[in-house]
Image 1 (cartoon, rainbow, N blue to C red):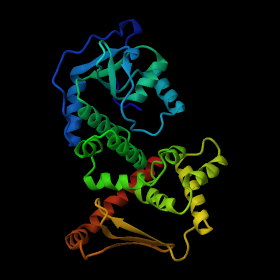
Image 2: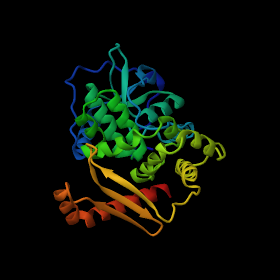
Image 3: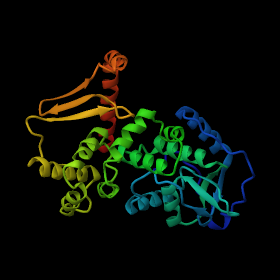
Image 4: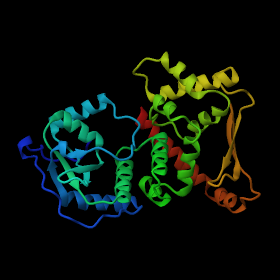
Length: 321
């Protein structure tokens, strides 16, 4: 999981960490480049060895699962090569204790290995802590669409301001809205049954969400997944659930000859246009009436945007290969 090699962590009897000196709470901006610079500066000046028993794991979840196999693989790598990337913690309200900001998987792995954890100690307020957590994970872990959507829901439920949510994930207001529209239609238990499904994007999750008004997604998913091997990938689990739900609505896992149509809406719920698909083509139509300026902008930038989306799809496909 790590890429920058540090020295082998010292033995456990060297793990005691002094309380951090008071410092002003740090505010992270929305710039990813600025975050990289900030993290480099912090890393160079503030790495400490801390006993994991003094670190509390709390805060919002940014990943769907911390699987045992993945943690054991990471623990084995740390046994061989040492901890390669520090975690970040902030002082707790309790004396001599810390709260994890990011690096929950590394912390879990080091607890299996034993000994201290290398950690960046910073005094952060709740907003800055959340932004650091979200942006660091975006840089290193590339969360899937549905993981980001769940993280957004948790942040909204916790009453974080829209600007903080956008900065945490590097999204625009429209990007946050796109995630929220999908997550509001899907049972959380269904999502956790499927898993992160890296490579399954907004359109595919949106297609599944669109079936929620026609069939019981959770019941069908539980039945469909019960017959799959335990090690089935989350991408295949998604496809199995989608096919089963589609069969329940149309009698076949394939789209009918007439295809399907999805209404596009903006963040206020006003219609933008439609996405129509059939076995032969996919068409995006923007309603010029009421969206004249956007339609002109899209007409001018469509080629570049589609090329960027195609490259993103290629990158995600290679990561899944």
